[in-house]
Length: 347
Ligand code: UDP
Image 1 (spheres, rainbow, N blue to C red):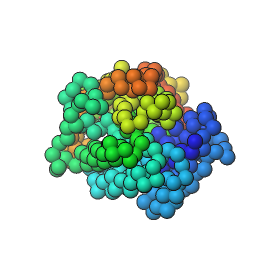
Image 2: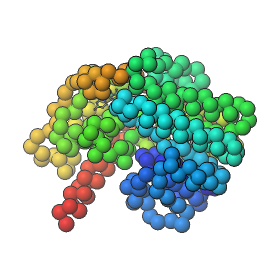
Image 3: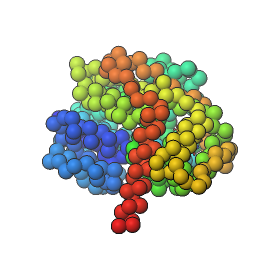
Image 4: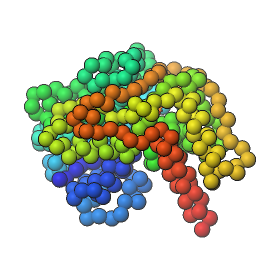
């Protein structure tokens, strides 16, 4: 089977490519702006990487949609700070560029596995979010944070509509705060534009304050990347078409925790880590208002818990990595990457 992964050097793309090359005889055709997150993958005649921008290299993209069996359009801006700083950039990339790709999947009758997002549920008050029952609740237009959820939601609806006309074989996945090695980078975290786990790890490493936005009582269900990739692999195998025409929440409801608890756990783990247990100072935990941290266009989601009954029933999938283990593995990977960089700089 031939997989086309657009955004192959992203967090999900890099882990998925690694797993496909290790565990199957499939071929991966990948495109991205860089290759730092896939540089460690051993060379393989089944891994075809081409550097480039999907919004510029359109002929390459169309040719490969035609050539491959399954398309994974993983290119998107997915960091809340950017939704507020560059909402039109989010719309152009996450919606417009991806719409073109979806239409080409329809034209060439290719299967698409599309990353929707847990963010589409927005401020839904349900105790856990159901793919077919929960309402998708967004704030007003001046709260620009919602442009991401809105772009993704509209694409979900377009994909669903093509599917319901029998013109597109699709699966929509909704990742709930996936974390793990290579989630963003400590460099982007320096500018404050990473997702929360990388942001906190960067603060610890650079001995900057860990910031709890609005006090840190908001909650997320953090999901370890290998669990997410297990679900994606069953979706790609698509035994008996169990994943076709479906939406799946891919998250770990057992790992629901507040952002304050998250900060405390990471600080404790960092203090116990062999490379840092003798540090003289550690980051303080402070509180900042969301207006100051993100700007006026921000609005938060207070709780986000997936129902995973559909994934369990159709795919036989369940997450297995608990929160502490997921955080420890993520922290360790960033710290050993830092140690390697330092060692290389000293050599
Ligand atoms: N957050 C925080 N401090 C930070 C970064 C994020 O308190 O340095 C909060 C943010 O306000 C949100 C949660 O952590 O409530 C998760 O943020 P993330 O950027 O990971 O994305 P989200 O889950 O909102 O899509």
